Amino acid sequence: MVSPTMVSPTMVSPFKRLLLTGAGGGLGRVLRPLLRQWARIARVSDRVDCGAPAAGEEVVLADLENAAAVHALLEGVDVVLHFGGISLDAPFEQLVPANIVGLYNVYQAAHRHKVRRVVCRRLLSAVRNHRHRCTAAPGLPLCRHQMLRRGLVALLFRSLRH
Image: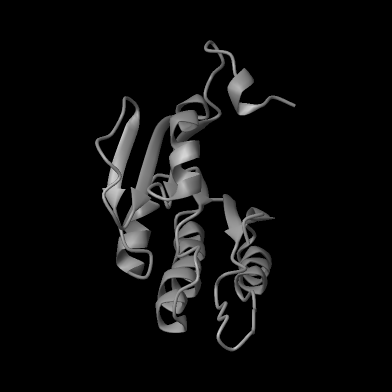
């Protein structure tokens, strides 16, 4: 298996355009410099400023709860690395639009634009509320439902931080 740091500079990029959501977050900032090895064009996005684009990058400000913005964001994309959303504890009212509605919009746009590969972090914090001591992960069933319904190939993983 080839690790991201072992890619040869002469290797042909496997994807034409790759999208990274949540590029301004912790994981996004780590992955962003590595994307150029995997795609000719890396489209990076967040709802906050991600800085100036590097060579081979497109920077797009977008709010994932805005369906029209997400559909535009996925135009011409081959693969999505979806790490956008709120990863820290926050009130339920902030988590649902960012994490659940945003995830739904990403899958809807992926289907519409025939993006067959979606990688997303399993959203354990999607509706975490420590005051009430309850934790649910509706992001996982939603991912599975969209994969089966839309014929998408998705890789889900759990962040070890939570």
